Length: 69
Image (cartoon, rainbow, N blue to C red; front, side):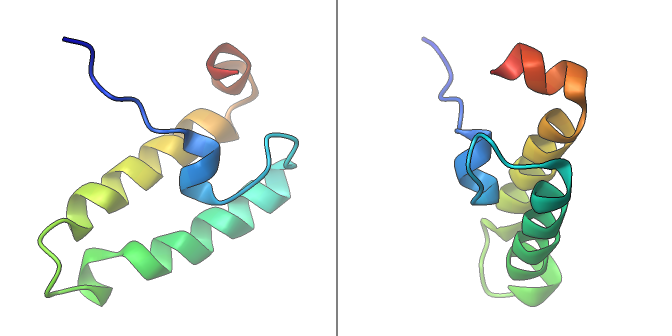
């Protein structure tokens, strides 16, 4: 069974044409919102935060972003 792959652009809340600076700002904003320390009562916060970090890791590198697209 195939594993669901989230849309990294959607996770970051940016358009597919977003610049590196736009992605960086969006990542920092979402990271503050989803950080486990900011959501101690949410058992899924750590997983969401990890998924967000993976999305930014892929999209912030031009080579991996090109492969993702």
